[in-house]
Amino acid sequence: MTVTVFIRYVLDPFKLASFERYARNWLEIIPRCGGGLQGYFMPHEGTNNIAWALITFDSLAAYEAYRARLKSDSEGAANFEFAQRERFILSEERTFLRQVTPAS
Image (cartoon, rainbow, N blue to C red; front, side):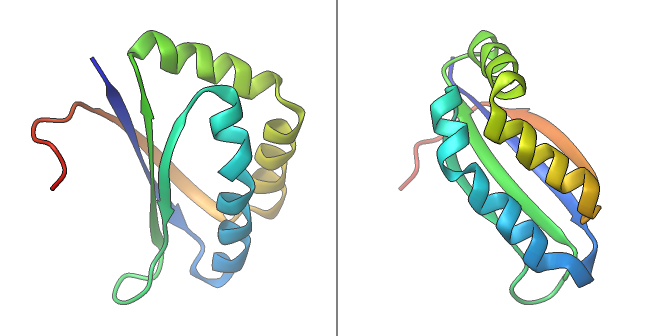
């Protein structure tokens, strides 16, 4: 069963440019480590401190293998360190979704 990880970020609204840099850094890292990056989404209108990411995997086991590869990836580790140092992510939540209907 395909699984999509939905990540909800609460951001410092004064550091959105830093989050955008962080998100763009994942464009090559996530696929290299085994994730199907659907995209990162940032505020445009309305709420100014919430962002989302969607990453798809073939299974929960594939997600676990991806997490292990991500932690050992030097660019991935550097991006996590950037986020911790700059503190633009205030919190994040992960929800594991299964697709019920096809995209139109």
